[in-house]
Image (cartoon, rainbow, N blue to C red; front, top):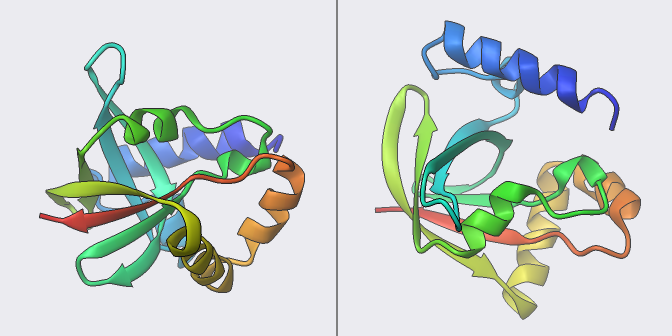
Length: 140
């Protein structure tokens, strides 16, 4: 997606101006979070802003769509190697347990994700044959 770099820069600006309370997606009426996870090789914290699917007051569903690109997003590689991560949402930071969804759980979560944000279906078509990684993050 050609607009992705501009949106990412705008996201960083909005997050900085609001001290992390809001992002571009929030302004558009969609829920977003900042995910911080250790780099799988460096161990250094890596932060990225993401759309999420609310699964309840303590649970977040993340979809590794990468804007429909053919490769998995780097954050998903790091998250796959982690047991825990940190979320920043609404000005609050908190730890979460990370669980990658597979099989039937993944299929059910995918249906919920596409129902919540139909754009994921378009991105999945663009990314074929790659299957998006899905993660359940539960607040600790």
